[in-house]
Amino acid sequence: MPIAAALSASVGLILLSVLCLTLPKVAMSGNIQRNSAIGIRTKETKKSDSAWLEGHRKATPILQATGIITLGITAILLVSSFFQAFPPLLPVVSGILAYGVLFAGFIAGAVVANKAAKNVNIQKGI
Image (cartoon, rainbow, N blue to C red; front, top):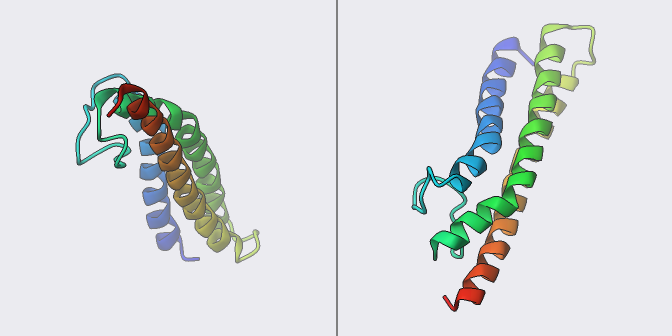
């Protein structure tokens, strides 16, 4: 994989990893209110403020693990791109794996958040 391609892939991975690591905590702190632009926006999390907060609280561990794992794989991507001693497919495989981990983590986080928010909404009769 050319170094320029590895760098551009890595920038995207790093930005999305930082989003995974910071967004849930910021949303739980109340600094990001329930909205239609940013956060875990599912049908259930958007119904009430308490559902929004609970959904983000439950998804936080998944998203943080996703961010940490993705940063680790991104480091492998960068190192293997700069040093040709590694197998030539390692950068490609690590890039694909990193984006796969992000995708799976986003989906898992949204599913967990939606389920938690739905439970809150049922308890409140919403």
